[in-house]
Image (cartoon, rainbow, N blue to C red; front, side):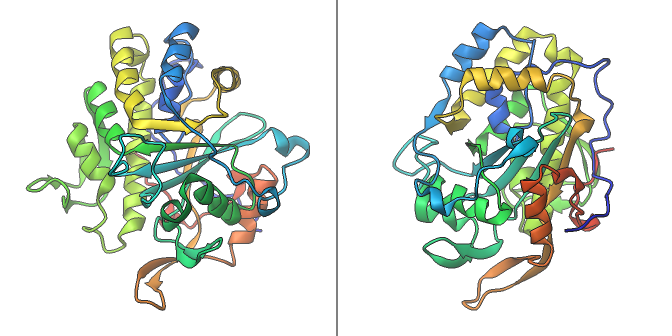
Amino acid sequence: MPTAQHEHARHAAAPPPGRRAWSIVFVVFGLFALVVLGVAAVTMITLTSSFDAVEKIPDAFPTDEAARPPEATGQAASALNFLLLGSDTRGASSSSIANIGGQRSDTIVIVHVPADREHLSVMSIPRDSWLEIPGHGEAKINAALAYGGVPLAVQTVEGVIGARIDHVAVVDFAGFKAVTDALGGVDIDNPIAFDSYHLKGHSFPQGVQHLDGEQALAFARERYAFSDGDFQRVRNQQLLISALLSGLMHKSVLANPVTMGGVIQAVQPHVAVDDGLTTGDLGMLAAQLSGLRSEDVQFFTIPTTGTGTSADGQSIVNLDWAALPGVQEAFRADAVETVAVPPQLQVQAAG
């Protein structure tokens, strides 16, 4: 396991004054890599009614206990792993987010909440990562959702990290657009200029710029414009999540019930969570994480050795199998923050 500490990329925007309790209803918790964990801007009644309106995913976990990693013991047993699966579209035959089987997941993110609750570690897995999907042979990791729905996606990710997923959320990418507009747009510092594939006629220049919802969605989805494809897409998604998190935590947003209500309404139609996640769980977690600030959220990408081509001609991302045991041990030992991540895969802090 790598032992060298690395400097995690962090959002550079100054946090609101003081140790703010995070509020923003826990629906947003599901949307932003389960990163936004709110507290006192809304009442518990609002939290309960808002969360009850969120779609639930039944049978989200593998039924074969023997096929799952063992449950954590000791202090690590108090840590939590949340899996976020993002999709561009919902099922063609259903408006349900939970009923997303048959589609490939466009975003795969694991949020590790350590036992001490002093920070959050957010790890992205590129959608084209090539590995063994249980019962289906070698394929891109995003195919797990298509082959076996949420339970197989969970089982596949658990095999990668060597630890159990405690909760899962499925997010419609349109949520990025809805929440960005509810906030009045967000500011990002774009590291690479590009012409948008998804928003025809629009270019994203290098540097600081303000994005509305439609632009934010196009920014998060883009991969065709980059020489390293999905790697830059992952970095841009992390950049947007960080900008949204900063916007949501701004004191003018937290103190404005109208804006907060708009954010809540914008999020609800675009997220589903496992049916084992309760309002009580979220309320307790909120209290435990009430001291966190945006700079306590660390983003990184699972170690890889670059891109390649599969035997059947697919363009793939090669996981770094030599480094992976260290990542797995970090998850099992509740030490994810110590995982050494190649600097080129770290999200660039917003200026």
